[in-house]
Amino acid sequence: MNSMQRVYLDNNATTPLLPEVLEAMQPYFLGQFGNASSIHQQGQQARAAVEHAREHVADLIGAREAEIVFTSGGTEGDNLALFGLCKPGDHLIISTIEHHAVLNSAQRLKELGVEVTDVPVDGQGIVDPDAVKRALRANTRLISIMLANNETGVVQNAVEIGKIAAEADVYFHTDAVQAIAKIPVDVNEIRCDLLTLAGHKIHAPQGTGALYVRKGTILDPLFYGGRHERSRRAGTENLPGIVGLGKAAELAMAWFENDGPTRMAALRDRLEQTVVSQLDQLTVNSGSAPRVPNTTNVSFDGIEGEAMVIALDLKGLSVSTGAACSSGAIEPSHVLTAMGLTPEQARGSIRFSVGKQNTEADIQFALERVPEVVAKLRELSPVYRK
Picture 1 (cartoon, helix red, strand yellow):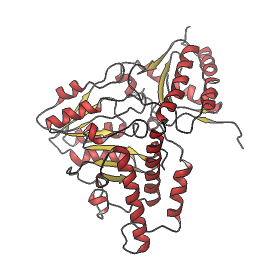
Picture 2 (cartoon, rainbow, N blue to C red; picture 1 turned 90 degrees about the horizontal axis):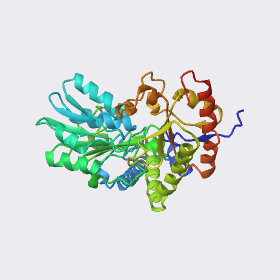
Picture 3 (cartoon, rainbow, N blue to C red; picture 1 turned 60 degrees about the horizontal axis):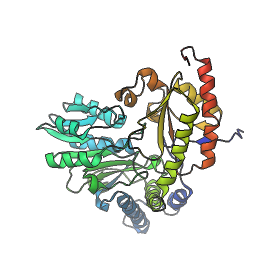
Picture 4 (tube, rainbow, N blue to C red; picture 1 turned 90 degrees about the vertical axis):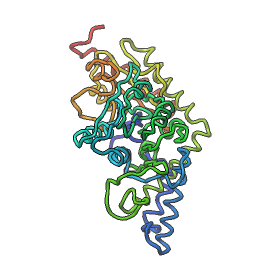
């Protein structure tokens, strides 16, 4: 049995289930297992649990309960938003740093006859709202710009983009998977018509999520079957998962009230600032941009990111080179190269993402290992020159 102490700093990939979430879910695996569409007692108990969870998710983002559609996660939410609105002949605006759930959906829509414009970002990974405005056309149907980036943590000016969309009478979708439960999110302040969130990024179970659909927005469904989720998402609801998502949303609200983001940012900043002070020839990517409080992405000169992830893993520290969905990809990060980094710089980048469960001791654990691993890898590198 492996008894090595381990510290997990890869919370942008997925988060551990909180004990309170597991406790809330457990009854719905056994005694309270009913189908929420059934009219008998067990079914109505299930329906009440689903609607209670819907209330908590809606409260977390300032929405109405009827505007929440439960999904299997962020990818389904993004697909439903894009494919549900865009038809051949329409125009779609996205950014160059979107998650692949949006990028690949947009590529497929392009193959089906939708025109797609990719708006660039600056060196900090920020989308210029004026560039979005300039990209508008008479046939623009949808703008889809993420709220917070999964690799760098950069937060976009969604309020300004939402204003542009509203003035142009164009739908606005934001992938908020990496923003929810890290920064306050209000769909009415953003003025978005659609917003995606994923349970496993906020300490709920994997395979859960939701799409906010503003009242009056008509979407073509991805799935055809029963009239579940007001005919927007056919299929029997994942009862335990939805209950867990609702509980995680409830806990996130309490976390905000207890100044959780400030404590999280303090841990991230200590890690980032100490690494910068102890090592040379590195760059904090998007270090000058507004970011969610838990994420830092650092490029280390002379380092191959995958090698560093493996070396740190052997020492008990879990981090990543970027998006977990892209692990094993040969190409360098599309996010970092879109920001102007060279392929070598992008491949030498490591993402550290703090979670609610992390402590000062965890950060100290990381700080005792990162400089040592960097020094060793640079010593072995045939290309690194001090």
